[in-house]
Length: 601
Image 1 (spheres, one colour):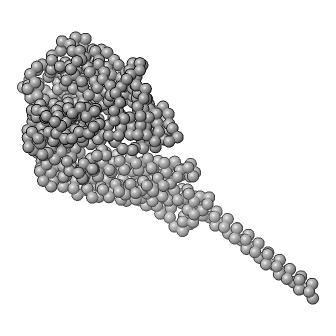
Image 2: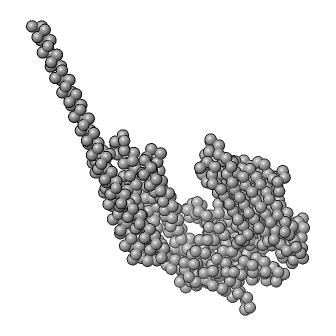
Image 3: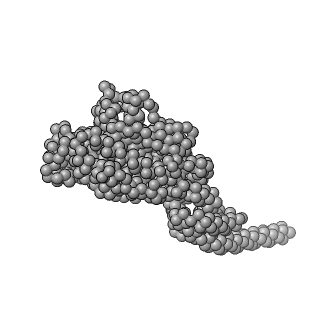
């Protein structure tokens, strides 16, 4: 009986084992079939989503072309088509099976990435593009063109909140895409992820600019009450770190969009001061002496325009009793860009200022023709007023005017500082601020700046070429950079015979020569070593300016002479990005800048 019971129990265990095995097999088969179905369905939906996203890309390209050409109806049609395409892609990457696919150990990362790409593009099409289309229709160059000296601010104010929201949406979506790791994705998915990140960065730059403009323009143009600004006209013929000596000054008022140029005067009319109008730091005094805060013509010694502007504001207030809301700066090259749009202006009964002649007339010919400083200043004042009046009167093609303003800003020829902290905070990250970078960055930032040392207008003949090459990358992310600065004089051989207004007092330099104080700024946290001039070892003076190492060297150039400076710089740690360089803007065609790619890439 015991044996019979044992055999019965054994058969029962075998039947149970077979049921377990059959259950496992069925489970595995079901999982395999279900997994295959999920993969197949995911692949099918992916193909559908891909087609929709390709359609969206095509419609966005059509939208860009329509906006650029001013075709408002075409832009609306392209926008609607892009929205339908991204909505289709978003729907094709949703549902329970897609949810399961995103948790699959085989295709989970790819499914999540595809879903994220589709969702982000749909957010952009539904929430960002409509705002940009609306902005392009309401803030076109024609809409921004002044009429009878007044700029209409209503549409800009209306768009400010939606542009800020659109930019916030892009920033959020960019962070979602950056959370995806292309390294774990299949190539067919990884590449679109990289492309989307690049496009979002580009779009984010545009929305940031548009949002800042919409927030800044109304208050700065007097929407909330009259504003007064001090305008510095920098003279590149006597070079300074930010461009040139501020030889002429003016005040500009803005009241509910109406802009007008008021009093004009030479910078010399402010005189000088017994001691700096603002307290100078030890770094500033060591680099620039107290002249930076004593002489109006020297406030642009520093490459940090917000500092120059604050000093100029203090000097103006000290002498005139008037406190301005901000400081603007421009130069004759920027005026020539505007003349390309507005057309020639008559400066005297017999002399016109054109885009092709403005730089030569204002920076050289006037000093050859007019030895009298007062007449030189008067000529410059009339030229500036005539160009300004042409722009505010709406003269010329509005797109060309806007292009000229943008070009001048890109070249650091137009700079703006606001004494209102909230506005200055918005300006500070932009090219218009002209601020010296003084904190940690992800990319090495080099500075190459020039200050005249002769008190002359000889820098009209100065030519400069700057090269920055990244030669190695340390494990810490620090880069080694070779910086080369080539300076040449194109002055005539008999430059010593030029008028005193051109060759200046010299301050020890030979008549007709160009004396330039060169400042080389290393990246934040970096170093400067191995200074050479024309291949020979150079002993340059070491300084520090707001945490950045600086090498200073004075170079004298006789007519036709060339000197080449070179330095080896290192960046701080965690700066693997593409190097950038800030350079004093020179005359058109007089300066070249070449920056090689990061050695860490």
